[in-house]
Length: 98
Image (cartoon, rainbow, N blue to C red; front, side):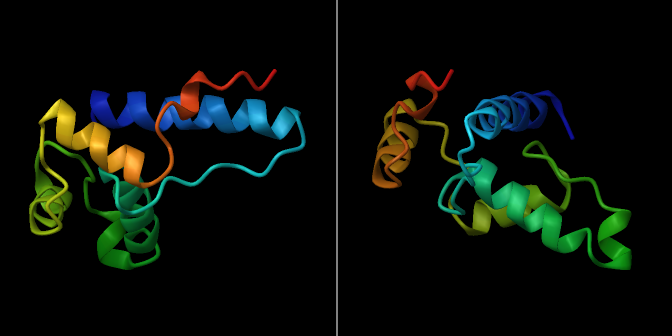
């Protein structure tokens, strides 16, 4: 895992930690978003012997090819914003939980 993956998953973990303290269900990022797809894909692959030996990162290796195939590798801020909005998660981290 690289720094981008650590930042995005760490933010999600912190957000879900706050939700847990309030008795709320954790948020799962949908596969329509690169981070959601990476988390789900890595979790699935880690259940296999081959998957335990694989590095999962946006910057290369096995997942990078998948990200390209699923067209999740767009770096346009506008396209990313639109994709997040379509999932209903725009501004989600702006919500005050605690």
